[in-house]
Amino acid sequence: MTRMFRDPMLVIASHNPGKVREIGDLLGPFGTRVFSASEMNLPEPIEDGDTFIANAEIKALAAATAAALPALSDDSGLVVPALDGQPGIFSARWAGPGKDFNVAMERVEKELDGHSDRRAYFACALSLAWPDGHCETFEGRVDGVLVWPPRGGKGFGYDPIFQPDGYDITFGEFEPVAKHQISHRADAFRQLVTACFEER
Image (cartoon, rainbow, N blue to C red; front, top):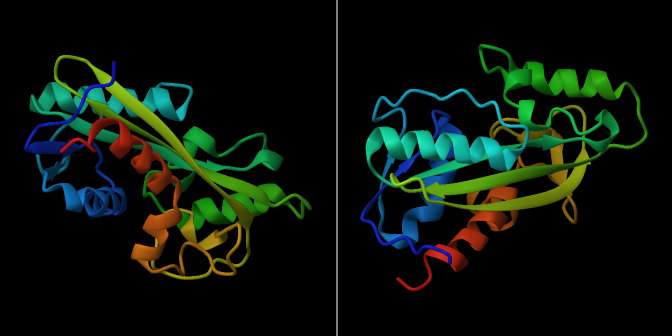
């Protein structure tokens, strides 16, 4: 049975300021006091899962255990079918140790090497974990195409090269509020809210 979230505090199990900001914005209406893993000096666990869901659960459980509080973790990335699903769960690693997503975006474009299929999607797994080891996990997705050169400076990660279906601007050009309504993270978050928050 799905567990409802009834706690006053929650750890966002991420050291990525862009993700922390987006998730914090999405949690705003619920009046939950939110802390980031970096604020609490929590160690980053080794993400050795082979799916977004597995890695989200690893991070959420590690943070919930270390902080003795419920923790919400996101594992997300860009999936390019023409590249056999890459960068996928290695999306952050393509940015290198300096987390330079200009490098990562250039690599995607180089790997595509003129390929006619520029379809891609962002996937996001959200895992809500409690210190007793219970997890609730949901996966969202948004489809689109890859553009080049990158456009816009409002998002983070691969946002400047991803143009969602039905729009003529990239996620890097979207206002944050508009992106929150259609993103992969928003899709997963809607599922999470319906399952774990709506009785509040």
